[in-house]
Amino acid sequence: MSLSFAFSNEHEAVRDTVRRLCQEELAPLVFDAEEQETFPRHVFERWGDLGLLGVRYPEADGGSGLDKISDCIVREELSYLSQAFASTWSAHTHLGIWPIWKAGTATQKERFLAPALAGRKVAGFGLSEPDGGSNVRAMKTRAERVDGGWRLHGSKLYITNAPFADFLLVAARTRPELSPGSISLFIVELPNPGFDISKLKKEGIRASETALIHIDNAFVPDDCLLGEMEGTYPLILESLSENRVGVAANALGMARAAFDAATAFANDRLVAGKRIGQYQAIGHKLAEMSAQIEAARWLVYYGAWRVDQGTLDAATAARVKLIASETAVSVSEQAIRIFGGAGIMREYPVGRIHRDALVYVIGEGTSEIQKNIIANSLGFKP
Image 1 (cartoon, rainbow, N blue to C red):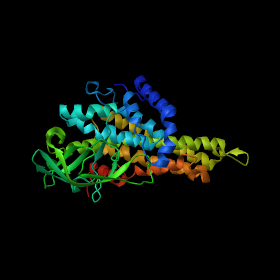
Image 2: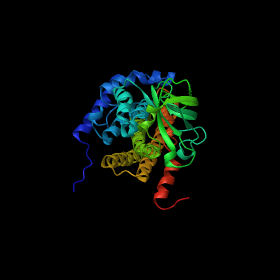
Image 3: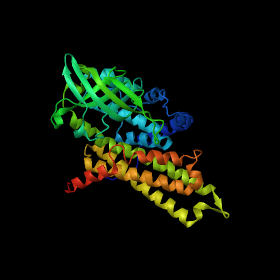
Image 4: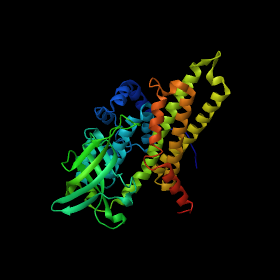
């Protein structure tokens, strides 16, 4: 049995491609996107041209035929540039279309998955609600059977890409009882007269467009019930577990960006004739940040490897997400401290990175939820 901690040549090629794209094409877009809180939608077609929207989908389905490790590399490098770009990409290429690839009919894949992989259509995922957050069992959005389809009623909150998406996967209760068979996913084409989408103003990840959605008697035809079957709750849980490994890669990219900015500043900033990194107080901060990032890096890619092996479990995904997201918050905060007063100036990226990192100790399951999952796996259930 062999053990290797090296990325393959194919993985390094993916990293080089995304880095070049970020440096040469996307970097000039970041400042205006953040200031205007508007995502440059045309980027999707470029992502599609490069095969970045289909990194982990089979070639037979229009994807690039790579793996979860490649998916995490893309996430890490996009997040190093801008978490808003990375989260917009993630909401589309994983949550928005992965369930369609996994359970959709041939017609649904042709109608929604294929154009989404090419960047011609933008997707999102409507799960969280104002009262229950991502607690699927507390879901209030309901779907009622009518002639030719369903009528949806309810609301969704913090839905990424919703302000400009072409379609959303929307979770709704199709039966009153609390059971896996009572919750289903619907592919809702936008605009839909029953969907009132209100864009939200945010402190973090500002260029990623997010919305509150009021759903009032929205009609969805039968052929847009995912897989033309009820009871896709297990698929939602599977998707969330895998995406926790993905967003951990996002957090890793943010931590790296904050560390690199702090290291450069510590090399350039002089106090009493010495680079501030030569002072023990600053040197120790950088040393600890470096160690945290290295630990998070290999936990993230271990989680990705587990996905590719088909052995990822909820507790492992929770550990990966917990450590990586808390690392991003800690490292970005220390970066601001190293910068001092400059750390809260928009001239430098560390303030933005810290605001963005805070989102991921909340989104995709709070750190407390991750700890609950891990404790449950150890036999300590509340």
